[in-house]
Amino acid sequence: MVYKVEVFTSPTCPHCPGAVRLVEKAKEELGDALDVTIYNTAEAEAMEIARKYHIMYVPTIIIDGEIKFQGAPSYDELMAELK
Image (cartoon, rainbow, N blue to C red; front, side, top):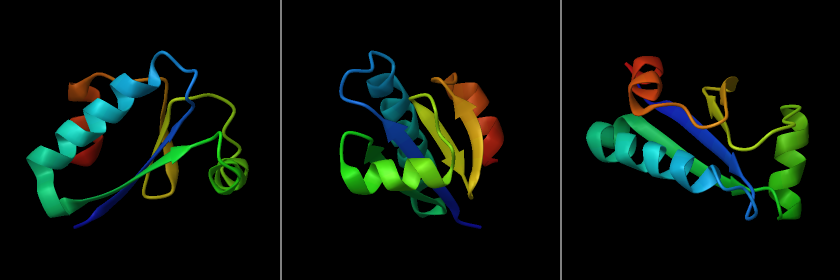
């Protein structure tokens, strides 16, 4: 099974880089089982997608179209959602 993981970030968010690193670490561990997209909400296209999901906070992590985390989860929490 392939999980679609979307991470919504902002360039001014102090917690966003950590969330991105967690997802990248999960991608290293799970490989092709993850399809990861990182969105920068400072870009118009990413902001439109964020509106579709009604995202109000960054970082937000969506897995298979469902908001799973608002804020950076721990690595164990993220992996529990992906396994």
